[in-house]
Amino acid sequence: MARARPLDVIGWRELLTLPDLCPTPMKVKIDTGARTSALHAFALQVIDRDGIPTATFEIHPRQRSKADAIRVEVPIHEMRDVRSSNGHVERRPVIRTRAMIGEIEWPIDITLTSRDQMGFRMLLGRAALRRRFLVNPGRSHVQSLRPGAVAKPAKKTATKKTTTKKTTATKKRAATKPSATKPSATKPAATKNGPTT
Image 1 (cartoon, rainbow, N blue to C red):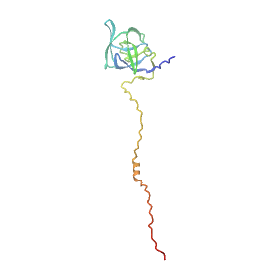
Image 2 (image 1 turned 45 degrees about the horizontal axis):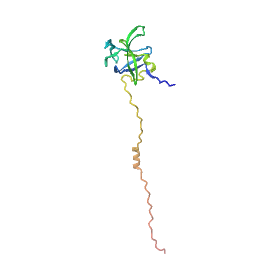
Image 3 (image 1 turned 90 degrees about the vertical axis):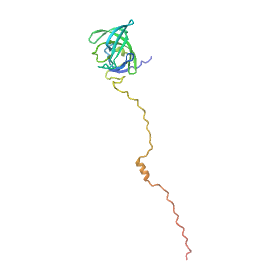
Image 4 (image 1 turned 45 degrees about the vertical axis):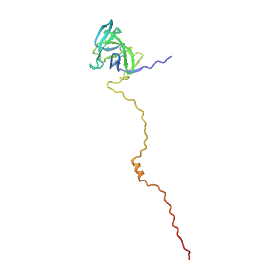
């Protein structure tokens, strides 16, 4: 029996990119209490494009800002009734696209809603998490960098260099040390003695 692949761990919030729609990462909240994922779609309209139901809307990836906003048109996969936490039922268009958190990419169904009171631009529901992620509610940005953070470069293996330089003190001692010279043997001068009388 093949062993199941271990699931990737994510925090209660992450940075998510929709590569086919918006290149700018947006802050998403992991909502295990919701079955479906929801994207806040600004100026949402449902139109007919050559006989195909299409959703046209704006994505504002940055919180409380229109910077990097982009308008998109996406074919509608289906219409779905979604019940909110207060019991209100809303009929929403559903689109099918790709999502990416860090290096992890997968296909995802997203419901579109025009609710500016959403604290996050997007909520990631259970259907998108199933058999892919484990959620650590005590951490955030596990798979993605925090906004404004810079990736740390990989550590290089330090190689220790050995130096053969002598210290100044060693050099001074070497300069003042007398050289060991072998004393030369001096023969006593030969004296000629005359005959004793």
